[in-house]
Image 1 (cartoon, rainbow, N blue to C red):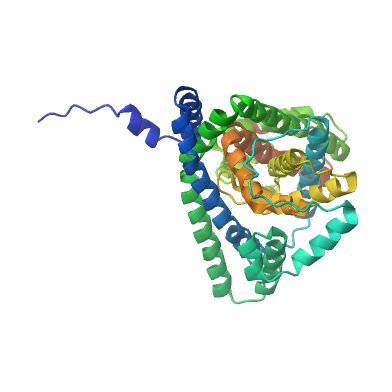
Image 2: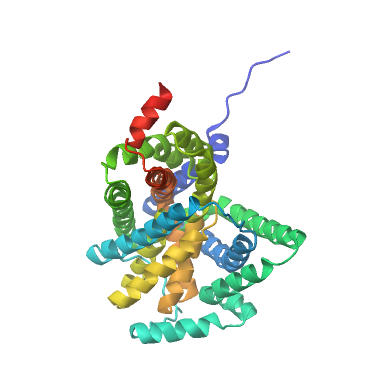
Length: 420
C-alpha cells in the first residue's frame, strides 16, 4: 500500500491560507492583470461591485443587533477598581480619534472612487450637522436600515439595548444569539474579500494606472503614523500622568509581549489569554485584570477609532467637503462611540465607516466603496490596529492598578520579581 503523502498544490495552499495572505495574493494578481490584460481587469470590476453590495446589505443589520446585544447583556459590576480603567479606555479611544483628525488635516488623503450617480448633501456648519443628526436619530428603524441611515440605526440599537436590559434572561440570550448569527454572516461575506479586492484593485489600476496604489500607500502611512503616535507618545503621557513614573518600560513591554502577538493574530479576543498571562507577570490584581482585559477587547478600540476617522475624512477630502474644527470634534466623538461597538471579526471597524460618513451626508454607495478600500489596505491596517488595541488593554489596566495600589516600585520591576 502506497503511503506516500502528496504535497499540497500551490492553489490548495492559497485557498486554505489565512485571509491576509489571500488578500495579498489577490492584490498582486489584480495589479498583474491590470498591466497584462486591462480589458479583462475592467470586466472583473463586477467582483468588486458584488463585494461592496454584500457589505452594504449586511452592515446596517450588524450595527443594530451588535449595539442592542452589547447593551442588553452588559453585566453590572460593583468593583470600583474597574471604573478608572474604563475611564482610561474611553479617554484613550477619544484621544486616538482626535489624533486621527489632526493627522488627516496635516496629511490629507484622496481616494479613487466611483462617484457616478452618487448624491451628497454636505451640511453647512455645526448647526446644520446637529439638525441633520436629530432628524436621523428619529428616523423609522425600517427606513433607517433600508436607506443606510447609520445614525438612526445606532439610536435604535441603543434604545432597544437599554429596553432589553429588563427583559428575561432567555430574551437576552436570543438577542445575543441573533448578534452572533449576523456576525457569522459577516464572516462569510469577508471570506469573499479576496475575490472582491481582486476586482477592485484590477479595475482601479487598469483605469487610473498606479495612482490608486500610491493613494493606498499614503493612506496606510497616515493610519500607521497616527497609531504609532498613540502607542509611543499619547499612551505614555497618560500613563505618566497617572503613575508619575517613566512610562516607557511598561509601554514597550506591552508592545513586545502583547502587541506583536496581536499583530499576527489580528484578533483582540484571541489575544485575551496572552494579555491575561502578561498581567499576571506584571503582578496585577487578578480580580481586576480578569474583568478589565475582556472588557478592553470590546470597548478599548483606539486603533478602530483612528481607522474610522481617517477613512471618513479621506472621503470628505475626495468629495471636496469642507470640515470645520467643531464638526471634526463631533466626528471624533462619533468615531469613538462607534469604535466601542466594533464587531470582533477581522475588519469589523471598517463596517462602521458609513456611520461616520453619514454625519456629512455622504451617499451610502460611496461609503461602502471606502469600506472596500479599507479591506484592500487591511493587510497592514488591521494588524497594526489590533496590536495597538490589545497592547493598550494591558497598559491602561497596569497603570490604573498601579495608581490604585499606590505602589512605589515600577510595574516592570514587579514583573521581574514575579518571574524570579
